[in-house]
Length: 284
Image (cartoon, rainbow, N blue to C red; front, side):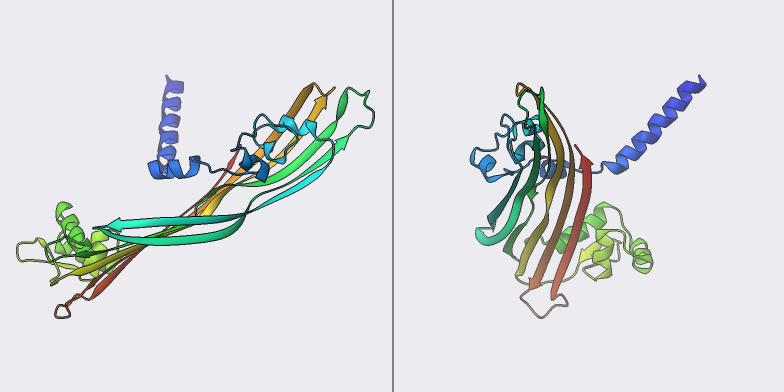
């Protein structure tokens, strides 16, 4: 009975840690698991079908036994030039962004110690190290829109959020004095909405069109470093092992702006900046 309680408590504690450690959504899952076409130029030319190949630097991660086929040492480097184009479209208005970059998607070195005695059962050993870029996160997207007098904007969104969550003026005054902990608190602290005599949040007065724009800038990459070794037995049986370290660094910056064309109201413009960054390492 005592052992059962200990096991149950341990499982509950592990689940609690897991809820904190894996607090990602489906966007993160797709971003870090969908790899691009990477590797040596030869491998990119055949569409990434390197698993069945031997004597190629790019096979360290997928088929390290292929290192046993090397007859001599080799160094390879693959430079790359990337072109990225994105289009943001809102209300019939299109905004195009282009981004070009130079990178090194793959670099590797193999040291082959081939036995000169062809009568030997073991034909030597091969060791290698390589760097591969799995994902390139560099991207920029933007859009713009004009909201009419009755069209909701981010100010109405913050106001509705405060009402739906039952926020009161006293509650938000305390948040204003003690530090912001919510988006509606931040909007209230910058005078984007106020409260009427009935206690409902009301947006600040604005007249005419409101120009909206947003810029989304993403930077970073996902890379893999592999250390591998391989050998062959009579050039008939090939053995190998590898250790890979995957590193990820993703940064995203979103800048949303609203400006009013009419200068007769207190509202002139706003800018909401959101910054997000994740870094991770994993062994394969």
